Length: 310
Image (tube, rainbow, N blue to C red; front, side):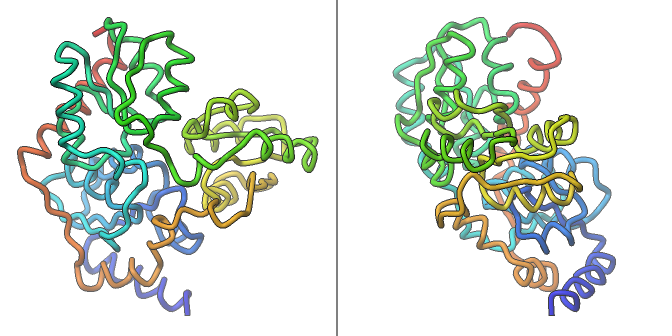
């Protein structure tokens, strides 16, 4: 059945002049049908380069919103707009405004895993791979950072700056469950493997890893490493991306417990991608002013990364 569905999706892509962007955590078949796979920010940039009229974003809601903000004149579809994110949903506009009022001179740096109406209040928007670089370049010694508290701890440990968490306890329901015991068990079970962990995990876990990085950075690390066996400390769907992009090497999830699979990512199925493309649903709509504010923050961040100290 999946082969027939994939054939029909390919036909519809041609008919609609559409592309499918698939996050690294997606189901294997969704990744196979995607035109591009990567992390959320990478895919948003890919969307800006396309000449397609329709973009189907196979990922959670904030990712589709972000793609719309950066590609406002295109039709952006979310296969399931109810697919949220525990990190993004931990921070709302009211909370962030209260912090901004309490710290009026402090820059606001938001992780890309943030809902679009909150992103519009950011000075800078970062990914797990750019957060440290951006905050190091800021002249201020204090930064408001959210919504991921574990990533905030990681950034603080590498920059030496005072990081005020917004909110105090935002976290990923997958990475937030990782423990030092899981790391110890992985070392015993796979003694020849290198252990890669995403910076959304707790800091005491990150300190035990051989490599800490984003999903795209994990792919590059595995490709370029002399090792051929890896333990993967991130959402278990990442194993699909690694198998597709780094063939010939062996990857083990750090755990196969139910929490290793993000319940929101798993809501995006091949059938929902098909129906989204067939019926041109569900269209992502955000206010133009919100989109402009988000795009400005992205551009400000890009200039900072490429240039000097802000």
